[in-house]
Image (cartoon, helix red, strand yellow):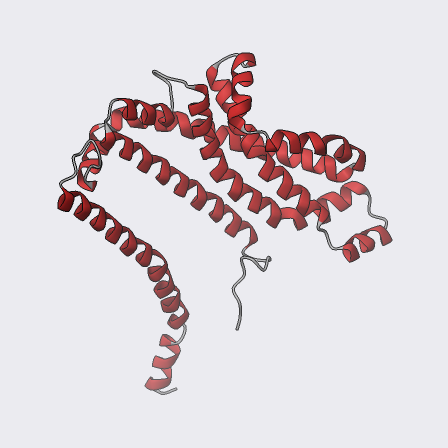
Length: 281
């Protein structure tokens, strides 16, 4: 084998890796460039128009405020994150269990579906006062409010997945005499996994939104309150830099939750489902 052939063999396998790195750099780099441009425009608008910090602070002041007020904002962020993930966990368990029950029994679905729709279309801010009256404490009320909002995407997507099983495969399972549990665990649940992952991604984002809305609706205040209280407090005190800092924390948390749920979905589906597989042509 000549030296040229050896060089070709050593360089050819690295081309897909280089293409992947180039794609990753573009995927991360372009949003970062857009973000830098937006921050630059924001700063230019403030400086050019001599806008006061209590109306619109400069980005650097928001960054300094985030660092300075971190001891105040971080505990509030932990409270909101705790409510978010607790609501998401309960919604995943409750939504999957109820969707399985509804998919296995037509009678249960007919009995519960109308009430699920009624609860879903009723705004959570309208239900929150009742929940605050009957819940033992404010934190439990916030968790219930966030759970109600997060529960339905998981339930509806998983139920749709359980109903979307290929009829030919169902006929095949019946032909071979498979029982209901065998059909459920070997066919329906694996087939509904992409739908469940969609519900997980939607529910993850909604859980954070619901936690903040629930805090607004409950009007919780003082120590042990979440970021919603810090937002309101900053508004009342005209501490706009802290308000922006709290908003950045919320946005960053939302992006992190979306990234985490997307990663779970990718790792689960990447080897077999078309939505996560790469096209060969």
